[in-house]
Image 1: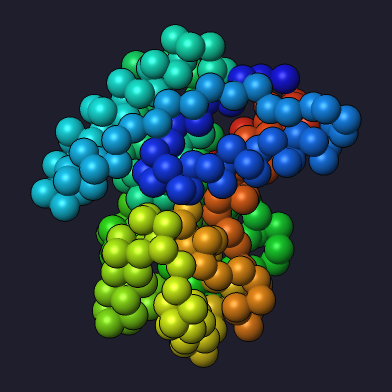
Image 2: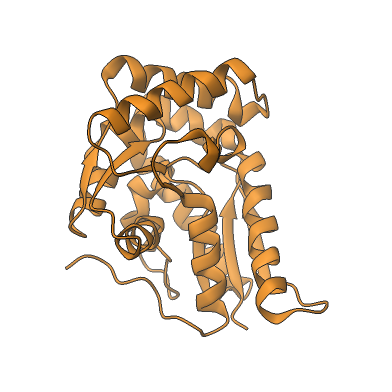
Length: 238
């Protein structure tokens, strides 16, 4: 079994989900007392969030590059970046790294295409929904990506940062997300990406009228399948 390098802390609530999911997957596949070989590097999210807010993405990329190299030095065979938003700096994270990054966007795109979906709605932080780095990665896989209206994007982002990253889950916020999801489906989305690790703490497949693609679970499962040698790394776009 390869050693999975989990680069987390953004937020730690979602990193717990990654750790749980990779171990559940190993137990399901191998049975018995098996668990995943992992190394975890958890950053201080306050520092990363400040860099996001100030637009200091180069600084954030440099910090995650240092963290990824620490995972490599600790024996990780590949890196799983446990956040959607920070894939914005994936290329900088990989600079000088001797082990591969299992890109969340590629794992998500593979699952969407396997489900026969081509037009998909995207929920995430304002950065993920509003900037091209994530949408373009999915589009390069042949997917048509829809994002919510500006008002709905603000709502989704606010709930993530004001509630979910703090471990706060409110029924009224779940209802608000259900409304956003329904509007994406009404706009033609054949499926919806839960494109922020914390979103899965709030809503599930039962909250959507169309198939959902929970990136935390998809990423974790892809990591285990690669670690066990049952699949190769998801193919990046050409």
